[in-house]
Amino acid sequence: MTDRQQNNGLAVAADPAADEVTKIILEDKRPDIGEIELTLFENCHLNCFFCHHDKQSTVGLSREEIFSKLSLVEDHLIKMKGRAEVVQINMVGGELFQDRISEWAYPVYYDFLIAIKELYDKYEHNIKVVWVTSFQFIKREAVQKLIDDLNAADIPSYIICSYDFDGRPVKGPYGKNIEYFADYITSINMVATVPSIEKFMEDKDEYFHYLYEKFDNFYFDDYIPDKGFDHLIPSDSLYLEFLKFVYHNYPDINPMKDLISKDKNHMHCLSLNKVTIFPDNSTSNCRWDRYTPEDFNTPLHRKDNASMMQAYMNEHGCLSCRWWDKCGFRCYTQWDWKNRERDLPDCIMRMWFNYMEKIENEKSKA
Ligand code: SF4
Ligand code: SF4
Image (tube, rainbow, N blue to C red):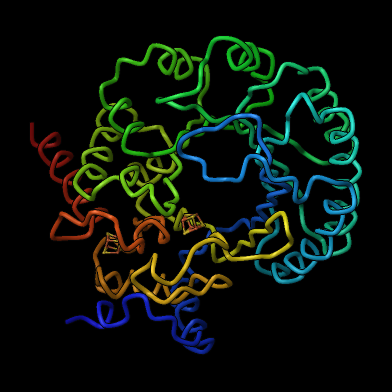
């Protein structure tokens, strides 16, 4: 029995000294931007199957609650001093751009970010704000005004819109907003659930092809697991087929793009530089407050992913792997999820890199 199996589900005390060693080992893989994930509230007018927020919740839905997050933002800016110049803020819901709250919420978002910018200036960080939205709103002028006003106030603001292969309609608000906000979109993000991967690999989605022609920045987010939704997590073998499919057909989709084309990469997980702030002002590195130790193979430490990262490296033998420089690793939270299907004998990333090397060698010999 491995150490990892012996530790299944047991919450042992965090070991800060060991975590520091892990971070030293990973220093050259640490991304050079910081991140603050600000989940203002979970409330949403939609009910997407891959999203496990409490859509009816009103926690965080007031000016006072939103402004109460300032001190948590400040804490992270202090922590990032000397470690990252740019600290990106992901403004996340729920859905922040809901027509039904636009009149009171958008001025609050603006005032809140003006206050945050003062903190950035104080601690000499550069700010970048990314609004994450499903694009299911019709009061687009109000959203545009908010973003224009922020840009005019020297707070660079962009939109990440999601594209769902398996659910949300593209006719109606979504399609209109794609056109209206085309110049504001910094990335179109998709979530690599089993149904999305399968539809993507069928390669028959006309609207995706339309988007792919129109925009040049796509990102496949890893599906972050949740209780009762194990069937959405790709098995190792499906994930490997997916990576191969991207390599052959869409090699400019992130985060695979750099892993395919560059020999030296940072890890794409930002958790060495990240804090997640929840609606009730609890914080974690990235893992949700509803997770329990039984959900993971390694002991659960919400405030710091380092021990999970170390377990990942131990299991795969990363430190002696020839792909260390090139590798971006995986989403550790998904990797560590207990009920994920592990049906391959080796590290997926290593198998993918070996596969691509073989193909490239064959091409150069041909
Ligand atoms: S390819 Fe696998 S074993 Fe090698 S460094 Fe990447 S994750 Fe670790
Ligand atoms: S472990 Fe996964 S969910 Fe957490 S920050 Fe890294 S990539 Fe994101």
